[in-house]
Structures are given as C-alpha cells and as structure tokens.
Image (tube, rainbow, N blue to C red):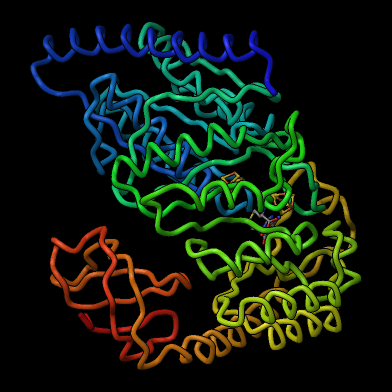
Length: 474
Ligand code: SAH
Ligand code: SF4
Ligand code: F3S
C-alpha cells in the first residue's frame, strides 16, 4: 500500500495545480475583457494513444482556464504533444514549427507550447533553445500534471520556459480532463517501460515502469461509466506486466477481473500486450469474460529468432507461434493484430523470410508495418550493419502486400454475418456512420445521429479489405 504521507502529498499536488488553474483563469478573464473576444487554443497530438490520453488532460485544464479550443493554428495558444518513436514523427514537428513562426510574426502575443516524448531528448531541447527561441514553453512526459503551473508561469514571463524532468515516481490523480468521445475512453493503467527493446526510445523518454493502483483505476472506470462511457481501452506499453511493481502486486488478469464487475461497462480493450509476458491466466480470463473484446494486439516486430534476440524482445519465433496457437485454441474467434519492423540492423533476406513466414502462419487481421528508424541513444543505433534504405523499402513493399492480402482473407470471414457495433462517428459522407465490432473491425453503414454511442446490430455486406459496408439489422 502507498503510505499515508505519500497519499497526502499527491492530494496536495492536485490542490496546488487546481490553484494554478484559478490563477491562470483570473488572468485569462482579464485579458479577454481587455481584448473583447474569447481566447483560443489549438492542440495537436502526435504518437500513440497514451499521448492522446495525456492531451485530454491538457485540454481539460485549458478549458477550465477559460480558453476555447479550435482546429485552426491561428490561435492564441498552439500546443503540440510530441512523439519521437520514429524520426518522421520528429521531422513533422520541426516542419510545423517553421509555419508557426510565420503565424507568430503576425500575432506576437501568440504562445507556443511543446511537450511530450520528443522533449525528453536533450539534443531536441538544445535545438529548440537555439533555433526555435520563439517557442514559449517546453516540458516533457514526467511533469504533465504540472501543466497548469507551467502555463501560468508562461503567461507571466517573456522568457522561454523549459522544465524537463529526468524521471518521476509520482502519479497525480483527479485533475480535470476533457474527453474526445463521450462514450469511450482510454484509461492509463501504467506509465513508462522497462523492456529496453534495442531499437526503441520509449524507455528513455517515458522512464521506468509504474503501475497505477487497481483501486484508482476501478474508481476512474466507475466514474467514466457514470458519465456515459461504455467502452474503455486500458493503456500501457506492456499491460501484461501491470501491477508487478506495486507494493501489493496485482496481475493484469486480476485487474481485468475487477473491471469486469463494473456495472454498465460493456467493452474492455487493452494495449499493448508484450508476447513475453502474456500469461495463461490472461488467456483464461479473456476466454471467460463477457466484456473483454476478442481482439489482441500482439506485436511481433520480427519473425527471425536471431533478430528478435538482437532486438532484446525475449521470445523467439517458436514461442511466438506457440502463443498464437494457444490463444486461438482458447478463443477461436480472436482477432489478432501486430506491429512489424523491417530493416533492423543486420536483417538479412533469410531473416526477412522468417517474418513473412510468421505473417502467413499467425493470420493477422491487421498489421502495422514500420521501416526501422535509427533512434539516437538506443543500442541498435550504434550497430554498424544498418540495412541500406533501398533494400529495406523493397522488403517493406513485399511485407505490405502480404499483410494486405492476409488481412482481406481474415476479414472476409465476417461477410454476411450480423455483428454488434458501437456507433462512433459520422463518416465523411453525410448519413453514413462508422462503428467498430468487438474485433476492432470498422463498419460503415447508413444511420442517424441519435444512434451515436449506442450498440446496434449491423449486417456486414461488402468487405472492402480493412473495413465493411453494411446496414442496420435491427
Ligand atoms: N510497447 C509497445 C510498442 C510501442 S511503440 C510494444 O512493445 O509492443 C509502437 C511500435 O512502434 C512498436 O511496436 C514498433 O513496431 C514500432 N517502433 C518502435 N521503435 C521503432 C523504431 N526505432 N523504428 C521503427 N519502428 C519502431
Ligand atoms: Fe519500446 Fe519494447 Fe517498451 Fe514496447 S516494450 S515501448 S517496443 S522498449
Ligand atoms: Fe511516441 Fe511517446 Fe507514444 S514516443 S509512440 S508518443 S510513448
């Protein structure tokens, strides 16, 4: 159990931040009266669902301070929540900063805020200090809970404020948050990562693994459900190792069992599952559950046991395929998705053939394929046998073609069936709505707004590869 003094400290921190919200709010009200219009902000999120979730927290605070959110970057405050998992995520941010600079020339009062994973890299912060001095506030991943305080400081300062923490063991609960959807929500169950896969920068920018206490998670989910949410996505870099570092250890499967009890909750999803830690207990709980969706995201990264060893993934091809078989035996209708990296240093054609072989055998519904990106500071970046770009690209295209073909074959199993779908949003085409089956399969069908956020039965009529066209079956 967390000690009483620690609990008190965390409560104090929440109160402290709430007082900064009030201070910033007073300043903002004053400013709005002076200029005679609402103040606006634009918030863009790069990267994964963890970032999405943390952006919701920042948006919640901006809303409380009194700023109005808008899509255009011609706003009083522009905020980027950044990602650095691959180099192109980085380049996107630098590209857009150039554009923001010209907007700021037109509106010198405009404030620019950068936070998130990319800011945890020292060379990035150096570059921002040197080349992008017009950025007003920079913070990282460990002190997002301090956003209200940092924002208030920024309002009072003409200097660039940079506050990067190297790590934290603090988890501050109960700050305001603005949800992207009313009926579904991400829920962080843990932060950080201890796995140090040799290509990956996440452990360096997100710090050590920390789990939230199960009671706090259950309480958050109960609150979400009371607020209209029926589907939750539990988030962590490796949910299968949830709870190991708690003073009273709890397994991920036990957490799922507790959440199953939450009345009114209809669907439970989670990501990401590291194959090395996926337990029999989890498979059993999933097979029995009425709420856990039959979808598992099980990143492969490579099918070659030699490469997997170099990647420090701590499973091999055989163990991965055995795991898939075990899961399919216990949950025959499971939908499997994965992540694959092509062109890891030293990857040979034979290694790549092993990846293609696993893709054929595992039968993925969808696979996210990535070209290996060298991340400074990771062990793989120091390897000398980097694969030439043209070789990687050619392999990537072959993999993509196979993945798409397999995906089509897998999705066709649903043709003509009626599936329960959560209606999520109107598509670009008016009157056509988009929803998801428990298998995470997208379906487009004619409906109306009153059905948003509800579960309907949809007949899946035409398979379009990744998604279906269908019609209401009720
Ligand atoms: N914790 C998750 C992955 C989070 S990052 C897991 O272990 O499965 C999401 C995906 O980005 C990874 O699964 C991997 O496929 C990809 N990725 C991470 N680092 C990368 C790199 N340096 N180059 C290319 N892809 C990378
Ligand atoms: Fe990166 Fe590996 Fe951690 Fe996933 S498990 S975040 S790939 S280090
Ligand atoms: Fe990117 Fe950070 Fe997520 S590096 S993928 S936003 S954990």
